[in-house]
Image (cartoon, rainbow over all chains, first blue to last red; front, top):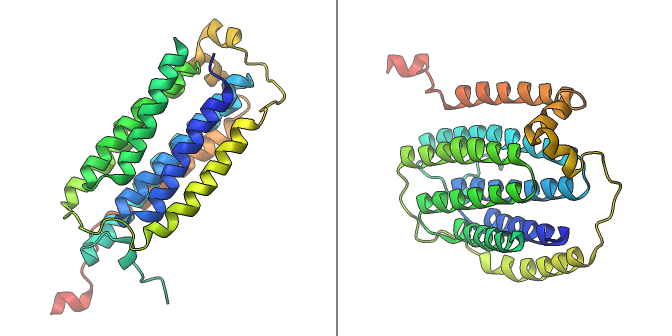
Length: 100
Length: 174
C-alpha cells in the first residue's frame, strides 16, 4: 500500500521542476510546457486526496483543471503566434512592449 | 505490486519532467512532456480514477500536446545557444533549499481529514465514470456550465488572436 505522502512528495517534486522551468527557460513555448507540468502535479495531488479521503470532489476538480489547461494552451499559443509574426522571436526576455 | 508500479511511474515522470525543462530542442521538450503526461496518467489508474485517466490521455496527450507540437513545427524555431535564462544559477540554490524544506514538511504531516462517502467499494460498484457523472451533473452542475462558457470564450479568443490582420487603409494606398 502506497502512503498518501508518497503521492504528495512526487507531486511536490514535479511542481518544483515546473516552477524552475518557468523561471529559467527563455523560450516562451517551453515556459508554457512547464506550466502544464505544474498543472499535472496539482492533478496528482487532487486525485490522490480524492482516493484517500474517499470523496469525488478531487476528481471533479482535476477534470476542470484539464479543461482550463486546454483553454490556457490555446490562448497562450495564439499569443505566441501573434508575437512571433511581429518580432520573429519567442524569447521571453525580448517581449517587453508592456513595460511602459 | 502497486508499490512497484508507483515507483516506476514516480521515477519516470520525474525524469521526464526534468528532461522537459532541461532539453535544448523544443520538439524534444515536447516529446519529454508527452512521456510525463502518459506516466502521470498511470498514477490515476493506481488511484481508481479511470475517467481522469481517459481524459488525461485524450485531452492532454491527444489534444493539448499535439497543439504544442503543431505550433512548434509551424514556427520552425532556431535553437538558441543560450537557452537558459541569463542568471538561472541564482535561482537554483534557493529553489533547492526551499523544495527540500517543503518535502520535509510534506513527508512528516499526517494528512488526516473528514472522509466522504465515495469509498472504493462504492466506486467500483458501477465504475468510476458513473460516479464522476452522477457527482458532476448534480453537485457540480454550475461549475460544469462555467467551464463550458470558459472554453467557448477561449476558442473565440484564440481565433481572434491568431487571425491574420486585415491591412489598414494607409497600407492599401501605399
